[in-house]
Image 1: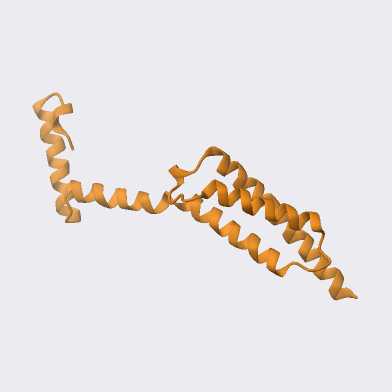
Image 2: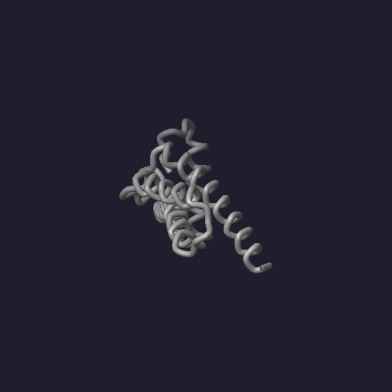
Length: 130
């Protein structure tokens, strides 16, 4: 912590005591705490990228499992969404690398996936009844 922002000697001493107690309790210095918190935040920052890549994998799986009787417009829509998502993600490794349009495309892909899933489930139920 930067003690230069604290005006009075009493305030400086109070902050130094808090830092000292915290370091003794945890066994870590302030800089080690900062390093750990930065590392934790990095793990979270690629969550959207991973979700988009998961959507692409799910979409490809649906295409691979699609029934011959499934409607061709759903298959075309899914292929189009896959292309859009692959272009939007590109080589992104963290969420800050994504554009706003990538997030919009992610929501559109989720809508397409849910439509395909419901259509596939409906077709599967109809074919199993016969």
